[in-house]
Structures are given as structure tokens and as C-alpha cells.
Image 1 (tube, rainbow, N blue to C red):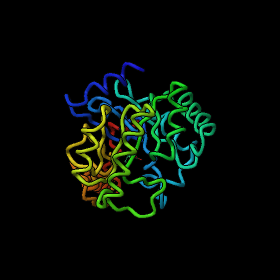
Image 2 (image 1 turned 180 degrees about the horizontal axis):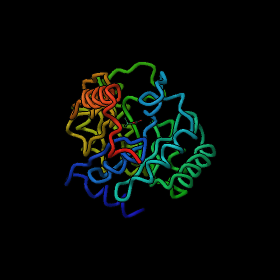
Image 3 (image 1 turned 30 degrees about the vertical axis):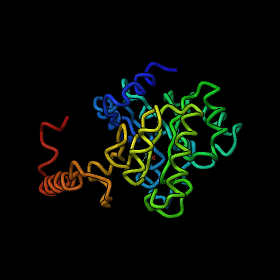
Amino acid sequence: MKKKILDLIKKKNKQKIVSLTAYSKNIASILDNHCDIVLVGDSLGSVLYNYKSTREVSIDMMIEHSKSVRKGIKKALMVVDMPHNTYRNSKEALKNAKKIISQTKCDAVKLEGGKKIYKVVKTLIKNKIPVMGHLGLLPQSDKTFKFKGKQKIERDKILQESQLLEKAGVFSIVLECIETSLAKIITRSINIPTIGIGASKYCDGQILVFDDLIGLNPIDYKFVRKYLNIRKEISMAISNYSKDVRKNKFPSKKHSY
Ligand code: KIV
């Protein structure tokens, strides 16, 4: 296993893991100084392209954004989401994961699901492709966006699938929007780090969509703390720029050749 991945696993029970999404170089280069993991998430479909779901994201879109992100990352572990319909069977998954890794030079890929993708995950790992799992709310396949783990049957399924993914060899699992006590149980029952989004403080690490954290996305989600109101900052800057242009104060001599 790659040293970076072993170092990440060693953080379990010792140090919280910090992760965020990035879709381009400039942002990635800032996150690289603070994050253990930078994820090129297929959330870019809704965040950047206003798609109704991540199901519309293509492998080529993921590759182009990942190539940009790669240029901004030196230290963090770079993980790329395999988009919907690119890992329906082992052969397809292997071909597409190899394509993503060779073209983007990312460190690992992330796949959504449990039992359904067990064989696929095993094939990728057998072929030395590091895999991150993703359980709980699964945006690529879930029709409704409700938190998971209310009913016993659902709780048991997610717990069993987290153990199954660990057995398949994933190095970490994202837990999206699951009930607090379930996140705690899962985190205690497996030896690899859990990374939560809307899954309580009991996970080994946290991930958020960067645009949500800085308040660029105007939507408020229960599980997001906005650390910045970037829309207000941008709006003020653009307002000042437009005033300067209209009053012929920009460009000045300093900004002219
Ligand atoms: O696509 C994404 O950004 C993700 C994170 C929300 C975990 O999968």
C-alpha cells in the first residue's frame, strides 16, 4: 500500500482527518496546506454545472477537473470519484479506474455502495488501485435525500456493508448523512478511518463540499457550517469594480501600459 494511504489509516483513533472537495487548481493549492484528503467529488455536477443529480456527470468531466486539481496538490491524498455508470461490473470498473488514474495521477478512486460493488472493489484492489468507499446517502443511486439509519433494517445494512467494504480492502469510508449513534458504532467496529459528512463528530474525519463551507452555495444544509460568507465578499468587490469602471477610475495609470 502507498505510504500516504498507510499514514492516513494510522491516524485512526489518534488524529482527526481533514478533507474537502476541490474542482480546480487554485482552490486545491490552498486546501493542500490544510487537508489530509482532497476529493474531486462528482458533486461538481450540481455545484458547478447545475445538474439535477450527479448521475449526469461523465468520466471526461471528472478527468478534466482532476487534471486541474492535480496541479494544485503536492502533499494531500488526492481521491477522485468514479461517476455513475462507470463501475457496473469489474471489467468496466477496472478499465475506467485505470483511465482516471493514468490521466489524472490521482492517488485513489471513490465508489458509492456496499454489497453491490463488493466484487468490483476487490478487483480494483487486486489490481493495486486504492479504493475509498462511500455509504449512507448515495447521491448516484438514491432518489430522495433523507438521512439514513432511522430504522433497524437500514442501520444493520449500513453497518454490515461497512464491514464488507473493509474486508474488500478499502482504505477508508465516507459516511454521508447517517444518524449519530450509527456513525459511532460503525467507526468503532472497523479498523479503517470513517470520513463523515452529516454523520456526526464520531467519525474519524470530516469532509465538506468546499463551496458550501465558504458560503458560495446559497443553499443552507443542516450539516454545513459556513466559515465564510464569500457571496457577500464577492458582491462587494464586484460592486466596487463596477463603480470604478463607470466612473473611469479603473484602469488607472498603474494598470496601463
Ligand atoms: O461528490 C462529493 O463531493 C462527495 C462528498 C460529498 C463526500 O462524494
